[in-house]
Every structure is written in C-alpha cells, then in structure tokens.
Image (cartoon, rainbow, N blue to C red):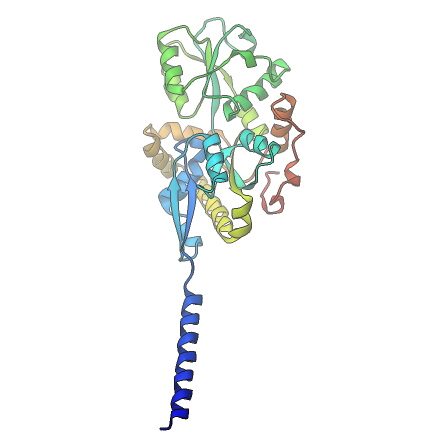
Length: 324
C-alpha cells in the first residue's frame, strides 16, 4: 500500500473517531440535582407525601436527582431561592407578595398548602376577639406570617379593622408561648397553627377564642410553591413534573385519608386522629385561592410600598390552576 492510501485511511479513521466521540458526548446528559425544600409542618403536607411516596421521580428524566432540604422559615427559604441554594420552596403568601413588592425574581409554580390557625386564651373574660383590649399580649410565632395574615383578616371580619389588635402581638417561639401559657399570666392569648394547637388544647382552662379557618380559605392564607425566574426559564420540564406530582399527592390524600393521616402522624409524632381532623378542615388542593383578596388586605394594612399586582399580572399565570 502506497503512502497516499495510508494517509487517506488515517484521515478516515480520525474522522470516524471524531464522529463517534461527538455522538457519545451528545448522548451524555448533564446531571441535574433538583433541590426542593420540605418543612415539617402541615402546610407542606403535599410535599411530605411526595417525598415519602416518591411521587416525583416517575416524572423526571433519568439524569435528574431530587435533593430534599428542610428550611423552616419563609424568609430563609426565600433567601435560599434567590441565592440559588434551592430550586423550589413553599413560602407563606404574605412573604411572596412582599417579595414581588420588592421586585425579587420569584415565580409561582402552584399552590402550596393550608393549615389550621386558631386563637386561644385562658382568661375567663375573653371568649371572642372583641374581648381583647389593645393593652393585652397575644403570642404569635412571628409577624409577616400566615398567622398574622389570618389574624388580620379575622380582625377585619369581626372588628372592622385588620389592625385593631396589631399592638397586642408579641413574637415568640410556639414552645415558649405554650410553656408561658401553662405556667404564667405573661400572655392573655395566643395564635397557633396545627399541630401546635393540639398541645395548646391540652392546657387546663384553655379555650378556643376564634376559629380562623373561614378566613384561611377566603383569603388563601397558606403557602405558594415558588421558584426563581432563572429556574423557570431554564427547566420548565422539571416544574411540570413537580406540578404533576403535587396533583398526585392531593389525589392520594383525598382518596386515602386514613393512610395519609397515618403517614403524616408518623412525621409529626402525633395521633393520626388529629391529622384526619386537619385533613377534613382545610382546603387540600394544588389550586390557588384568595390570592388577590389577601394581597389587597396586606396593602390595606400598610405592609407594602406599592399596590400589589393582580395574580393575572404575574409571570406564569397562564399555567396556574385557580380555584373557582
């Protein structure tokens, strides 16, 4: 074989090698870690079901791995999203509305969840919100939270002013508030959410002052599943998978309430009967409800710089499912 043919063969072999390597590289997908926050509270119940029953994985490409995180504070979750440490987190609606007011690049993916929120007191002379005075002290986990939103909505309904008892609110961790209500008169009442309300109801002499489940549903007082604009634009297929898993989790919970109660009770370390009551007491759906009404309430109380955008004005509105 002469040198000319040898060179041709070598060139052809090199071309074949390059083509094979190129095809191999094109078939190798980038490994993606899908980072989702799942707090250990009832408003994140659908996420807990997704995680425990592996409902998301079947919708994901083979190159995607789910990584679960556990951040409890809505503010910390928001900051983790913005800092690209999380891809999805379910955050209190009031915090999202404030974030949009501050022009943070967050996008709603779906509804998050709701929870029971009640007001309690041991005082004999307090049986409704009307019995509190502005000199009283009411324990609350923190301001700019679902607890405060529900309380403002209830005050507007009962007292005509959402800020009528705002001066009474004192931020304190639930465990400390419960201990104080048990052993002292430091607080005249407290606002608690499920499952902390179970421990509160066990305190001798404690009574329910206001059941706020009606305003929770009317104003959509709960969480929203959020992502960033960057992740929304880069990974729409992962967000679609997430929404499908959320729907599956809600369907499972509604069709298997006893099993769902047992599953969640094991996470919260409480009796399943309590979880079953909660499942039957609040909306359990991926559909968004009451957003515009809550946003207007927050604006009315002076907590926003600007009049809030309507839900229909937000990015991704066309893909959201809204409760009728």
